[in-house]
Length: 498
Image (tube, rainbow, N blue to C red; front, side):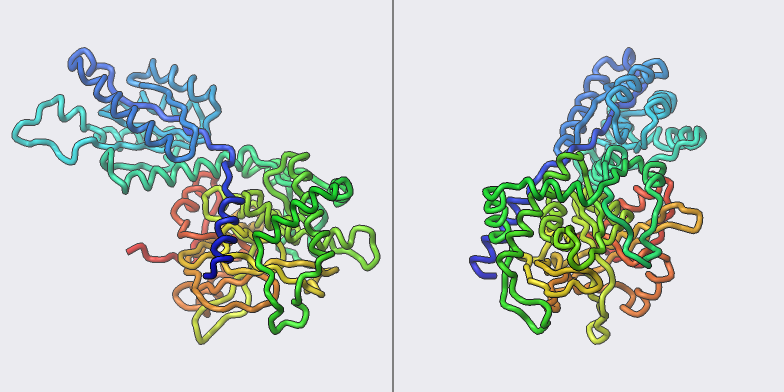
């Protein structure tokens, strides 16, 4: 990579460094009140372990609400009141020693949020020659785990997860980190606002959806917008803001000479200036309506007042997506939601579909025209000037790149015949190699067991033709999310962790 490309990559990282609203995780220590008078030093020791647990949890970019100690059915009510009043997204029961299940169920049932049970043993093992009952109780993090789970299940509450290990063990903390990422997804789904502007791309039956179902099954609010809402804000952008945004775009994007595609030429300066103006207007639209995401489509008509506006959203949308505000084209509200989920997992989530396969290389290109998650690009993203936006009206700058090489995950959000949502998932690899210079994103995706079988299985799972393409292997946490939300989940390809 050249010095200029390295600088551009760093500028991308700096621009897209952000801090979305943190999830709120409620945590409480679980113990047994009868132990305290019997072993006077025990409670203090266990609460020190709990303090260590909470401090480690705070390092995971979540807001921690510590409910203190629940050691009886009576104290559970006070702990539940603390956590419920803070509107937590997820509850973690930190089992610091044996506790009766009533001390846990009484909290989780009243708070009414997804919950996980965690037992982290401080010692690797007991000193068998010298161990005392006190030592055992300091490391009795396991005994009540089955009791707690059994009681919760009998109350109709299924734990999100149960994590057992050592207090300072990385395996356990990796699992807890996944719980925190799950909490971030739950937070945005409970509180998110997605804009919907335009109408469905004509004939794409898989794009149609009922906005109310997103409120019903996720908790999202869908804000209906007109292109006129954007038009007015673009008109109000002054020249200094255009020049500032233009400078940013020229620093973040690479503008290479044309390749073989006759419709993908150099970017026209006037069109780039217009795209910069539209980008500023889009930022204002997002801020004014307090949106976390947006799905749009404008068919356009030659000579119509908003045709130029409707075909010039790609640059601004890609910048917003890279900053954690997913923008999906073709009015795809389902994939917009999938992109939002992947982004809050820290996996990116770029708007994508299946492109031509490479049978010799056993992979398939995955990408799309339109807006993309430029923060997960493999190197500086490219801008090309398209004289034709295939299948759409107009012309203008378009974004091209492959996502970072390595593990990738596809999250397809589809609907079943009864209108319920369903996750369709696949893990694979983003492979190094050339992509077409067409002004579209393309990633060389390899999925098991082979490209033919993968596409057949993916097709028969019934996803929409779009999906959110993210970095990393995220099926385990996405399965937990689907289960927590009560949404069916079908895995088409899973990578071995061996």
